[in-house]
Structure formats: structure tokens, C-alpha cells
Image 1 (tube, helix red, strand yellow):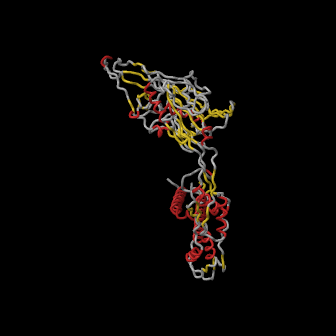
Image 2 (cartoon, rainbow, N blue to C red):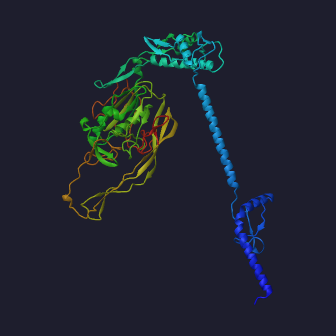
Image 3 (cartoon, rainbow, N blue to C red):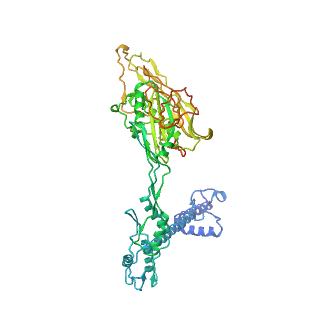
Length: 622
């Protein structure tokens, strides 16, 4: 049994429990004020915290672990609100700055609009401009009255033609009226004609374009196929407007307020540098390049037809030559025949196969003449008739070869085929400085891996049996340098472009059908003929009676008189300088050339991409 002391202690404990429960129920209603008091107290104490009894979890603060430490705001485990408050302040400040900036910009735009707005108020004060009374007039009425008295109709005349000079005073009148209508005007104003020097000079130059005519030197103008020679034309005088005198006359008319003046242009005659007689002496073969063809008669027919197509072409200064435009589409109707060529990497018989040898030979001659190549593409695979890295492929409707006559006189193209030799020469007045020569040097830097094999079905083979039809070949990577020499000494030999050629994929025959057909029961596949040459024609030697390849070194000759086609198809020889009327014949084949030879012909990129011209020669760069 409990004694009196125990009962007393139990009653006291129950009383404390009821008291604690009541305090817990009412604690939530006082937390806000407690938080405020705690925050204020914390601020006064520099952020220190005092222990406090709590009915929540015990975190071990205080003696015996019976107390928890509160944060400055009175809540347990509540993050500080200061970062939020600071962020809000920064945001409000940023918004205020943005609105202020927009308001300022709007005010500036409004001010600018006000400055450029034409005043519509009639002028009350008496004001005169060059004697024209504009009192009581609006802005537009005042402008009309001034222009009526001083109309603009200035023109420059020559030989019955007239050039209307742009109105140089209208802007001046506008600025003057803005000044009058936007402020306190004076009683009298004069039109200001100063500060127009640049505008006057520009108008004089435009007028001069209408009548200036450059003098023409004696030069070739066309080709006579019957006589197999270029026709020379005489020199022509030019004319030139005296722009300095024109500027002076226009300035005087403006100073006198003669805005409707008619000013005659002073034009003088310009003499040509040389006449037809001198031109005949100056014109010569400034470059020649030859390549050797194969024994394939069909392919050689295509080379011959392409040579005939470009032979006799005359290119005026600044004019661009396009191989595809000049030669046109290669068709059977024109006599082109099917010859071995590449189409999408496959060897096929195509109409016009082989004409890329003509474009390549032309490219070589163009380089050595100092003319500017503008468009060129290389073959996909290594060529056999010119050093790799130095070719120019063509295909009608596809890759083209183009160059520009960057000289001051007309140039002519001579091209011919005979005795398995393709020859192209440039006929003109020398472009390069005397003693200067351009050549290209190509060096193979590395071989690339042989591509993965391709497979063809051969029902004559046993199942699982494979037979190599062609072994394939490696690709290659070439570096081509432009070599510039003067009097035999190397001036520079910078890298001009790099070329990548693909390797040929091996072709393997196999039978996956499971059915074996005796060879005598099979038929030979029909020959594939495509309508136009592919990206890399004539690279792989043809086979059979007319097959074969020629890896002879391309040859080049020095300057000579006008070249011509060979007298007979089988004639051969080397172009040499000669007197008037000398008709050289194509060079005979010479010894084979090894890659990287210093005297190799011009090259090109082998990645199948259009090649941009280099700053010096126009030859493509990678």
C-alpha cells in the first residue's frame, strides 16, 4: 500500500503532466511571437542561441540531452530567410533598372522622331531664302517655292548624249528648312553649296563610265579553220573623259546657283600601245604541254574530237573559259565512242571516255602560261597519263574545268591529237615576267589501305569457292608544290595543294546460290555503256587487242610562233621556236616519268571536291 508520502508524490506528478500537456497545446499559438522575440534576441546577442525546453525530439543539446537548440527565428531546423530577402531586393533593383533603361530609350526615340518630323506649322515670322519669301508657308510649301525658283536640272553632255546629274542640293534645302522651322529663324538665308566635293566627284566618275572606252591594241580576234590560223585585227583608239575638268565645271555651276546648268564633257582620245603589225611580232606560243594516250582507238577518237572542239578558241581579257561549254555534250551523234572510264568507281564503257586527258593537258598549259584557273576537280583514282596530283577531270553536267584570261590582251588555244600524243598550247603575248617560269612538283607522301573487297556472283564456281577477279590497289596521298623559277633559279616552291586518291577495291568471284552451272552454259555479260564520262575516265588501262597504257612523261615546249595541228595524223616532233608561219607538230613520246619528278605537269586535288584557286596562280588548294 502507498503511504501518504507516495500518494502525495503521485498527485504532484500527475499535476505536472497535466500542466505540460496544456503548455504543449497552447505552444503553437505563441510560436510566432516567440520566433520574433528569438530573432530580436539573437540579433542583439550577435547571433548566439539560448537553450530551451521542447516537447519534440531530443537532439542532445543541454545537460543530460534534455534540451534542443532553436534557430534565430524560433523554428527548429528552418533555413535562414536572409538569402531570399537579398535575392528579392536584387530582383526588384534589376527590374527597376530595366524599366528605367526602356523609358530612357523610348524618350530618345521619341526625341529622335521629333527631330526628324517635318514641321507643319506655318512660319509666322518674315523669312526669306535666296530672296524667296516663305512667310506664312508650311515646310512643304516653302520647299516647293525654293525649288521652283532654283530647279535642279543639271546634266553633262557628250556627242549628243546626256547624263543627268543626281540632285545634290535637295538635302541641303531640307536641312536649311529644318533649321528655320525648328528654332528662332533669322530674316534672311542663303543656300549653302559647300561640302559637296565628294558627291561632285562621284557624279563625274559615273558620267565618265558612260563614255570612257579603253583603247584596243592589235590582237587576235578570231580563228580561221580553213587557214588554220588566228586572224589579227588592227588597233582601235579609245577615249577618256577629263574628270578633273568636269568636277571643276560642276563646282562652279553650284557656286553660281546654276542648278540647271548643261555642262559639256571634255573627252580626249587614247592611243593604243601597239598596232596590228606590232601585235603580230609580239604574239607567240607562251606555253605548250603534251600527254601521251593509249593504244585504244576509240578512246583516241574521243581525245581527237575534244581537241578539235577547243582548238582556235579566243578568250578576251577578263573572259572565262569553260571546257564543258566549249566542248559541249559528248554524244554518239558528234562521233564520240564508248571507251573505258570510271562511273561511280566502276570501270564502264562510256560515250566520250578519255576527254579528261584533254582537260588535264589544257590545265597544264594554262598553268605554265600564267593564266588563272578558277574551277578544277581531280580524279577519284590516280591518272596514268600525268603525274598524280596534277590532273583536271570533266564530265558534262558534272565537274568542269575553267580558267580566266587575266592578261591585258586576247589569248588563243591551239590543241591537236596525232600519233598518240595530245598537245595543247596557249597563244598570246607573254604574261609572266621574262625569265620567270611556273611548274608543279608532286611528291607521294604515303599510301593508303586497299579498300574492302567487293563480291560478284559466278555460278560456274563451286559453293564456298572464291576466285580473285582483280587484286585491287592502294590509294595514295600526294603533295603538290608550285615551283617558281627565274632564270633557272628557284624563287619559291610553296605547297599549292594536297591530293588524296582512292584505292581500287579487290573484286572476288563466288557462288552463293548453291547451284553450279557448267561454264559452257553461261553467256558473257553485255557491255555497259553510259551516256557521259564519269569522274575519272581513262585511268585504268583497257584490255584486249586495243588495250594497253602509256605512262610516258608529259612534255612541254618553250615559246614559239603560233602552233597548229599536225599536217598528218601520224606526224610527230617537238615544238620549237620558229619564224612567222612556223607550224610545229606534236612532241613524240619520251621516257617514262617517276612520281615526284620536278618537271611533272600541273596537278589537282584528288578528294573529288571543287578546288579553290590559290592567290598566286589560281590553282586549287585543299
